[in-house]
Image 1 (cartoon, rainbow, N blue to C red):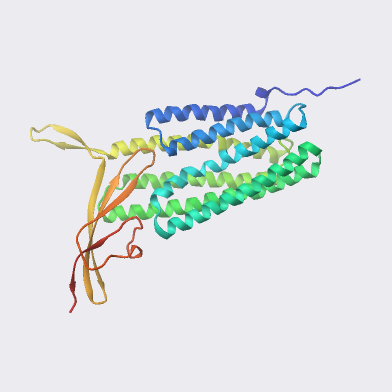
Image 2 (cartoon, rainbow, N blue to C red; image 1 turned 60 degrees about the vertical axis):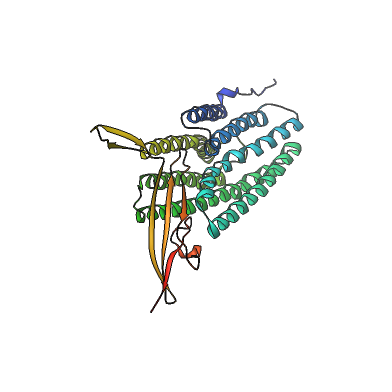
Length: 346
């Protein structure tokens, strides 16, 4: 009596649900871009979701059914290339914001740490691909166990990189909020950015740590065979849903920007009129005494409000003086100032 193994249909497995979620995120992304506009920030959840959808479909082909080894190995390799685009690509959202906010040494330090960990993640992923292909071609179960444990280093590196991005984002936005308070600017947008960033990066960091732990206790392979495997599948489902958080963030920043960019005033005829204010600016004048010299510095801070989290602070300097102010002497790294005038001390 012969027995045959029935291959489950695609839409009977959880991979089909994850595929549908990712494809839905791509569709929702275009809707959000229609409401706001197409920006690099808006493309991050669209691209990562598309990569996840394709990877889930390839995973079904590579792990279910009887297929020739070579096509299975090629399909598995493509899936292992697309999954990092989904998992690591979400960090591009924070990276683009920090590229606009950080300056000087802090920006160089962040870029060095970010791309160093990206390099580590790429190397670890190549190791995963090599051992998985060896398992597919030769059927050595030890290679599959190795793949499972190497994933711990892979997800651990992603979690560390998420924590690094969280640190730079939160500290920079808090500093910007304090600077806007000193300049008597409206700080609602900065407070919103700080709150949303804390929630966003906290969720992503927790998900990364959770995925690292679940991969350490799951059974090797893609089949769900124990509680650890179920928790790992749940953690990945949360990652597939994370672009929804970014879409909410984009829409909320658009609404916040529109509310903060308009005001009402009473005209000469006594009627209330609205006036768009795409920019808010203020001058900060500080008095500095160094080496017997007394200097007055004047800085104009201009805050441009854009949608999709693109809030960039620019500065203009006024006045003349015998010397420039070093960047390190200012509280906010993004500002520059020059002496307005100076006079000798007693």
